[in-house]
Length: 318
Image 1 (cartoon, rainbow, N blue to C red):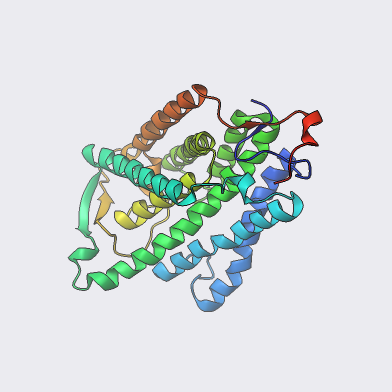
Image 2: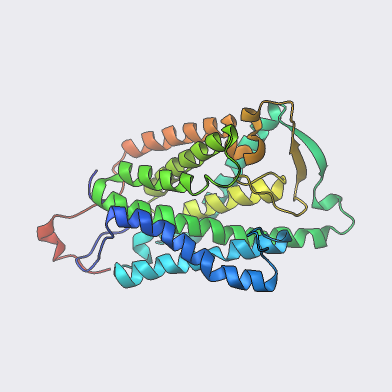
């Protein structure tokens, strides 16, 4: 599988960032993107000096600020690597693939929350927005944050599955591309809550999510679907049921119902402070999906294998 090009063929003028440099740059791109928006966020009152978001508007600002990282990645791909957006997965049937991925992401999240609820992990703390005296006013933050999660989820996919996974896979094969990008993706969530067993399981599940979503992107040969999947999962998790998203809570009325975890239930059932992503139910769902996708990958030849050096000169630049 060495030399596989996941989304589009490689042309002679294209550059590939070295693997070790790409892993470091992925972190640098995130830090730079956050740094670019930190001062405006502090000045406008969306972010406290502690770095925490202030209310739902602060959460929205933080989610929208991920666009800065996306622009940095696109700039690197365009200016240094001399490639266009096709090569990081933004190819044909974008709307169809995004909507389909969004629907699949919603379905997966409902299965996880439903599974935890069936095991007695939740109690209903309050109703959703339509139980309030002014449902339209309560719905506004949810709609704004929906767009915010599209930006945040898509940015993380552009960085990890669109750019990092593709760069590594083009040199070392799909397994290395998925593995290294998924481990880095998990480590980026390792400081979301205090060190604890649920954090360890949560990070492991985030790594497993990276494997599953990497297989999804590779099989589809596109980034559109996983952008939708990621955005849907985070949005419905935090805004549909009022649960923690990788340990982060959102201060707004949830859309469907406000759930709270039962403290008498084992932490590994609910994920405790990390939220459902720290639950073994999520582990089971993601592991099953990863196995299915891996088997379906093996059943057919996906991807664009790198042409031999002798034929590269005849390749039309993209």
